[in-house]
Length: 84
Length: 253
Ligand SMILES: Cc1ncc(C[n+]2csc(CCOP(=O)(O)OP(=O)(O)O)c2C)c(N)n1
Ligand code: SF4
Ligand code: SF4
Ligand code: SF4
Ligand SMILES: [Mg+2]
Image (cartoon, rainbow over all chains, first blue to last red; front, side, top):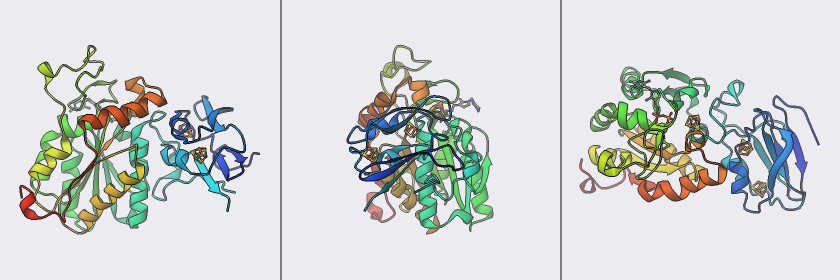
């Protein structure tokens, strides 16, 4: 699913949360991948702002919506909205 | 569903993505600082000073009055602004090279005089901007461009422990802490207390943040975290080192 904003972005509707990656901010550092407690983040086919792979959840089941990935992103490229 | 990134309100959105390398610790320190400014609701009172070194890449980072000045001299510049305009909340932001080598005299004298400013220092164990040379904070045995066989403490001594030094030379109303980008929430709370200490007109406040420099460390994300979380805290202990609430007899004041 893709929507428009000031930065290129992509959204993933997972069971527990809506995962938004602003590819226009993601520099592909990988810090978030390492910190995800359930190892659900993988490199994406979508490219980030420097032309390196951005990140995305590997499926729609695993993400718990904990928000750790967004906390450790130095570029504020991830937004997690937990579902009630 | 959200269409705007969740940046601190005090960040200047038009200048994002910011200029730091992928995975750079400066981004996380300034995220913690931005959140601290937002939570204290003091954006309109801040004067932000950045140094030479990669910290200068933040000259347009925040929507606040900003000064960029000579290497290590951000501390006296912010001291001057604070003395001229005591109603401002002045933040000097710099790297370990700026604070502990080239500008160490400024840090020592501002701390000794208990200047009512807040100094935030990103410690990445090297001179980042100039290509990764050895700094006062380079860990024993750590390889850099100018210590290719690893830092030899027989030749070059032990790394500078900045917060411990500042705690020893400040009066009892100072605030001194060491945080880490591995715990952004804790770092934000330390920075909030440091800013509050200035707002309370108490005295000098100082927060060092352990920060990554993946570009010069030549580390991937896994090794960047490992160095920050496992190697750096062996020598640089994370925690509050001095708080204004501590009793006077516990300090050198
Ligand atoms: C007086 C002076 N000496 C040396 C330099 C060259 N110089 C520019 S940046 C830098 C290193 C900065 O290292 P640090 O303060 O640790 O910041 P970092 O880039 O690691 O964040 C040096 C030595 C300078 N600009 N001015
Ligand atoms: S919200 Fe938590 S579980 Fe989901 S991708 Fe981010 S770190 Fe992983
Ligand atoms: S931490 Fe942020 S910039 Fe780095 S890969 Fe993850 S989303 Fe991209
Ligand atoms: S050289 Fe190091 S400190 Fe400078 S922006 Fe790059 S990662 Fe950050
Ligand atoms: Mg440095």
